[in-house]
Length: 203
Image 1: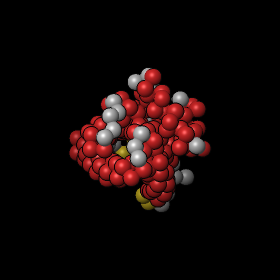
Image 2 (image 1 turned 90 degrees about the horizontal axis):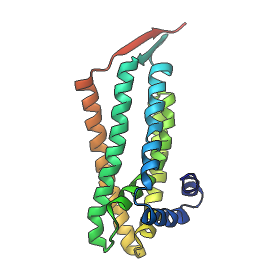
Image 3 (image 1 turned 60 degrees about the horizontal axis):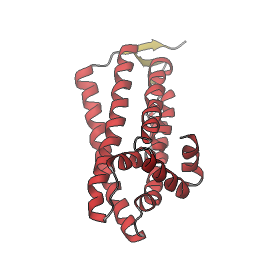
Image 4 (image 1 turned 135 degrees about the vertical axis):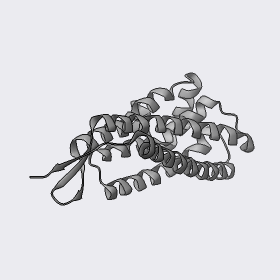
């Protein structure tokens, strides 16, 4: 897994060939990648919201109680895993249009590896900041899009034209899934879990 992880950022065009071979040999190869890397944003956010905190006013730091932070991070982890799984299922469903015949495991695996930049972006959760989060997520989105357009034609063994159209379709669905699932998570968090905030004076 570590070799493929490095290749995604150094030689992504070759990494996808290796990932395809691994998924053919071991249908659940992607699970370790998904389940372990999805912990990065969840764990970092827990540390950031309970230890670092954020400032809404001068001389005051806002943090979450440990119980609330644990609820939030567990919800985030489940959201990530469910979101990647849904994307894999959509990729499998759309593959019929483009004469590709990947398995469901291969499609979920492709979605998991494509989402790798987002997993790494979760490190910014150690320091909760709106502008830092926006900047890091934009960078992660750009590289994830690059991985998608470079990787999908190779992973699915498609011609360039078909691969481009397939990638664009997946990108559009991915954006819709991302927005929908994040909005649902936020609504659930605020309306049902009722977060508990701790305001700590500075100095």
